[in-house]
Image (tube, rainbow, N blue to C red):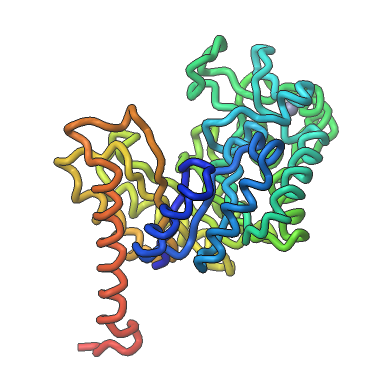
Amino acid sequence: MRLGVGYHGCHRPDHVARDLDAIVAAGATVVMHRVTEEDLAYRPAHVAAIVAASRDRGLETLVDLRGALGLLRGDAVSFSVARDPEIRQRLSDGALVPAACPNDSRTGAWLDRWLGVVAPTGANGILWDGPHLWIPGADRWRTSAASTWSCTCEACVEAWTGHRHGAPGGAMPDRLTPELRLFRQRSLAGLLGAGFAEARAYGLSNVVTLLPADADEPEALPFDDLAALPYVDGLGTDPDWAARGRAARPYVRQWAERVARAVEPRRARSHIWIPLGGIARRSSDDLSIAVTDAAAAGIRDLFVRTGAAPAAEGPDLLSREEAWRIVVEAVRATEDRATEEPPAEERPTS
Ligand SMILES: [Zn+2]
């Protein structure tokens, strides 16, 4: 199993170099750098320097388009939306939110623009983390009810009435019907698919992390459909059991198996994210359990995030350094087991 690090540290190349050395020393071979639209707009040279330092150390280097267009996960405000506010999603109560509508053609144009800035940095690929339409319930600044949904902008109404993305046409429903859920998913998948193709044209790979949402949750995207899109090189999810008040087992195993099933008929690599923050000391075994269960499900890449999260620190919680050490050891243990155990077909049958 490969180990990858979502690096959310600072952009000072001298500081990053030290962290990259530690990442390599721990046996990680993949790094994903947190890059916002603002970084791409104002600091592309910094991004290029950090990518170069990563590749110089032999790391596969992905650019994590943090919070891009308000459609990917991340604690960042979209530069595109600030510059082009007409592309905003409109909630079902009419409120405009700081995220771009996937059905607005200008959104795709902004995405192409950002990929064009990433490509010359020399990165190997893009991490598309947690694509989603606006989730009102997750917005702590909201003034709309958590039950509202997007998007009801003109571009979406036009797409719906024009039977795009399998829409039946007619008036758009005022609640999330099965047809509307499908339309929303396909609207987003359509933009992502175009983005993957554009990235590939630049020579970039596409690694996609989907939110671990069940089919009845508004932010759910079908794993199989996303895995089946052209130019998907990696697919996974982020089953953060601690954030959801669950135990690692069987939660991680269930999601890992779902990823493995979606990826199995394709050539894409599977991955699972393991949280380093918010792990209670008394449940520290959950970290190695999660790694072991992901490996048992056939997951090929294990990713962790670094970076400060003050809310997730306290005397009863593991520090990120402690959590990191446990995860690194657990990944090494799965490798040891893999070398000790002969492949299934070579095992004695008795
Ligand atoms: Zn829209």
